[in-house]
Amino acid sequence: TTPSTHRDPSRPVRRSATPSPDRGAPVPAWVQARIRYAEESVAFERRLAEHLAENEAVTEEFRTMARAAWDRARQQYPRALATFGSENPSMPGTVGTSRPASSRCCAPAI
View 1 (spheres, rainbow, N blue to C red):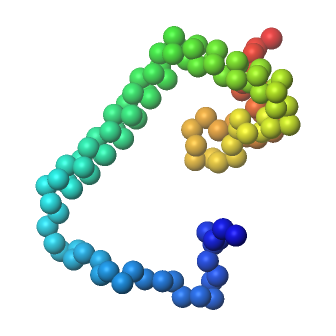
View 2: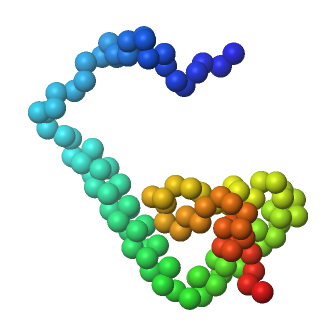
């Protein structure tokens, strides 16, 4: 059997035997550099996404890819079309998981 990822709420949370680092300790330069790199890469990816979303050629290429994926999914996995959508309102571009909603988004315009 595989261990469950959900713990029994009646059991206490296990703590590591290793104490956590002192919150007042200075952060090494190499750690600061990694944090800065991660923050800058997130900002870069956001700017790149905004730029590409405004580019009509990129948008059209995405439409072409989405249509091809939708057509293939309709042929090979007609019962799994809901996986193209999401009900998560915090995700940009969420269209829902119903077949009509996904179809409006991914199916070619007639």
